[in-house]
Length: 107
Image (cartoon, rainbow, N blue to C red; front, side):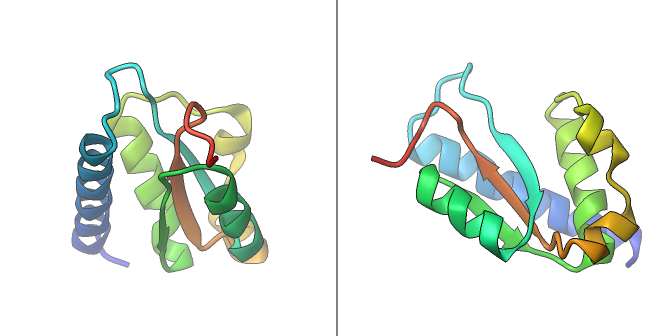
């Protein structure tokens, strides 16, 4: 996976985030949460929160894009997020990057 592909996926994801936030009237203090998840957890998040932005990516890209997005949005990494590595991503089938907002449960 080359840098250009990672950069393009990061930009596209950030573009979707900004558009969705605008569409749904996010306020400046409405913060996106991000999770690297597999199929089951993706479905659970989509049932629990609205809106969500879930994008399937190749294992070699998803971790890098996740790091870039968190960095560009000036979000800090939890201990669990810091310990994620490519092997864990592949082993646990974490092929989705999902964005959601804790203040916006699906009703």
